[in-house]
Length: 118
Length: 111
Image (tube, rainbow over all chains, first blue to last red; front, side, top):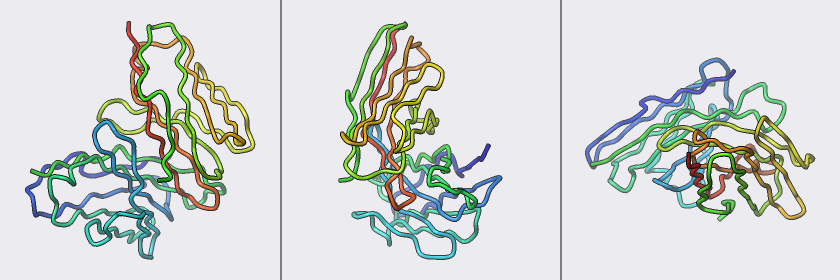
């Protein structure tokens, strides 16, 4: 089956630093990847849609300058949390839609990255 | 907010009992999926039901979908302690590839 990996699986950083999270589709090509954020005991909130070779589309209320998304290849999307603050501490999950998908339901989720900002 | 609502928010049952979770959503969908998440871990895909389907089964899972009421239910029969987790519905929005997650139900199965 299709596998999506995320790196790192967890990261702790100091307030004010930037953190990059990678999302990779390991055995398929993904034209579209999605980034979600999940706070403790809450649901996943869609942050942005990442399309290969073009700018990401952000959901309402998500700061694009704060959460930089780059989808440089068909197997890699990165999310950079710039000038991270404690309120950015969260579980970040990506999902990837397969290039060959003929329907909208072929989407695979990564295992998530836990970010803690001190 | 487009986010779907799930109820109950939390459910505690005895092993062997059935657990039912409900999901309501607001917009037109292509399909609806149910996921399980153990504490602090990633998502595990359980089942997908398309908008033209009314019911699907997978092992001890039964999912129904009523598009006229914009609602779905997940039934877990003969629950086990290992079923303890949070369960989320995710609706695939028509005309997009986006999925919007529900608020989740925290299920606790007591041995």
